[in-house]
Length: 537
Image (tube, rainbow, N blue to C red; front, side, top):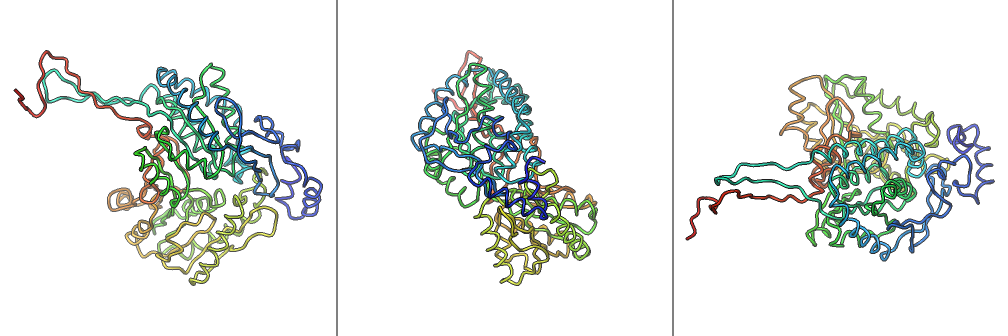
C-alpha cells in the first residue's frame, strides 16, 4: 500500500517495523515522504500560508497539522490574524460589487467549472481529508464528491431560483417577489466535514450572487487551503475577483468574523454550546444565521422491521467516521420483541470490526481514529460516567494501545432512557441501546432530547410510517424510514430543530437563506388606489 505506516497500522504483526519507521522519520513531515506525494499535487508545501485575500499570506501563529492516526506532523500552517481577516473582508466587499452584477447563469457556469476542477482533484483531495481528519479513504473521497454534487445542483439553481408573481387586490396591480443576494457570507466549518460543509454553503451562495469568507476548523487547515487553491484557480482563469476568501485562525479570528456587520450571514457548524454563543452575537447586530449544531440521533427498530437491513443501518450509523458525524446514531431504540437478538448480532458485528481498524488511507480500513486527544478524553470520561450510573459495557470501552487517537467502538446498555448521559451528545463511537415496549414509547424517547437533527425508523407498516413522519412523529429535521439516520443527500435541505439550530443547508429551498426577499407592488394603471379600499382625500 502507500506506506509502511499504513500497512503497519492495519497489521499488528508489523508493529516493530512501524516503530522503526517512526524512529527513522520522527524529524520529517509527511509532506516530505514520497508516499504522500498527493499533498504536493494539491499545491501544499512544508509551510503553508493560511490566508487568501487575493494573495496568499498570513501573519498569525504557526501551527502544525497532525495525522490523527499516527500523531505525525503533516505540514505547518501560518495562520491568519484579526488584521488578516480585515483584509479578507475588504477584498470580499470589492469582489461582491462585481459578482452581484454578473448574470445568474454566468455565476452558475463558474460554479460548474469549480465542480469540474474538483473532479480533477477528487482523489488527492479526498485522501487529504482522510489523512488530516481521520475518516477512512472512501468517506474522504465521498466528501469531496458531495462538494462536486452541490456544484452541479447550484449550476442548475442559477437558472431556476425565482420569486412568485402574486395577484393584487387592486386593479392593474401585480405583486412580485425578487430574491437578491446578501453580500458576504461567512462560513465557519467544523473538523469532521472540512470540505463538504464549505461546499454546501459556498456553491449555493455564489450561485445566488454572494461572496464567501471561510474560516475552516483550526485542526484541518490543509483541507481548507487545498480546497481554496482549487476554487480560486477557476476564478483566476476567468479573470474574476476573489469571490472566495479564506482566513484560518483561532478564537479571535472567529469572534471578529461573527461580530462584523459587513458579514451579512454567518453559517456556523459546530457544537450547540458554541453555536448558541455565535447566535447571540450575530443577533446583537441583527445579522442572518444558519446554525448546524449537535445531534443526539436515534434509530428506532420496530417489531416489524427488516432485521438484517436494520442491522446494517445500525452498524454503519454507529461506527461510520468513528462516531464523529453530526448524524451518527447515538441512541438505538429497539422493540422489546427484537431487543435481545438484535443486540447480540450488533455486538458480534462490533467485535468483527476490530480486524478492520487501521490507518484511514489503508483501503482495508473500516474504522479509523478519533480526531484529537480532546475527543479521546471525552470518550474516556463518558465511559467512566456511564459505568458509575449503572451502565453495562457490552463491547468496547477502552482506548487502544497504539499510536494515534484510537478508541474501541462501544455499546452501552442498562441505562434509563432519560439518563443525563444519554440526554447529552458525546462526539465519539458510543451508542446507548434502549428497549421500548411499542412505537409510541420509542417516538416519545426520540423526541425527549434537546437536539433535533436526524432520526430513523425501521418498519414495514404503512400506518407506523405515517405516524413517524407526521405531527405525532419525529420532531427532527431529518426523519428517515428504513435507512440510517447517518448521512444525507445534497438534494434535500440538511439541518435540524431545537438545539440543532434550525438552519438548513444544501438542497430544496435552502438557497432562500442566502438571499434577501424583496416584495414589489407594481402599479401599471393610471390611478393610485390604496390597499384595503382606503380612500384618502
